[in-house]
Amino acid sequence: MPPTDPRERADWLGVMALSDPDELARLAAPILAGETFEALRAPELGLYMAQARIDAAGNRFNLAELPVSRCVVRSRHGTAGVGYVSGRRLPMAECIARVDALLQAPHLREAVLARVIRPLADALAQRRAHEHARAQASRVRFFTLTPDTPT
Picture 1 (cartoon, rainbow, N blue to C red):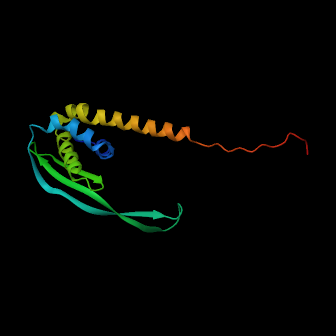
Picture 2: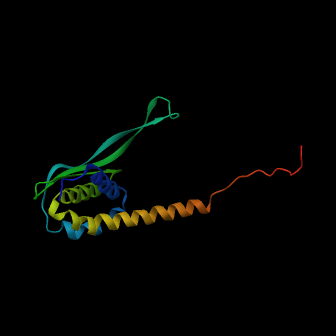
Picture 3: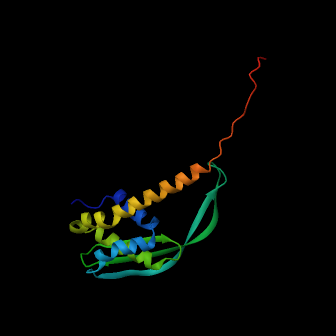
């Protein structure tokens, strides 16, 4: 299998970061059971500076510092994995890093994609569709009535 495509890696890291932590842990447990990892950066909390603009062309300004959990591990296969997730979720960041490390091992990638990433992506798509349907149900459409009289 060819080296990891950065866009594909960004996709699976995004899916894991947006997934339910309990679902991620449940799906990843069988894959991670027989593996050993070395912590290159133990799970830790950091801060991320969120920036905003007043409008699309305005200057940026610092909005807030947001907590982020991060972790970096190396698998016994020699691949390094990273885990970044918003909030104070150290176990989730470590789980993401471990799964990412296994996804970069060519002989394990397809199995991990099938057992962890694709089910998480399906659950995320269902959750987004449900949220979209709820938002559409409460959508208000404004219109104006005009009389049909000639001017």
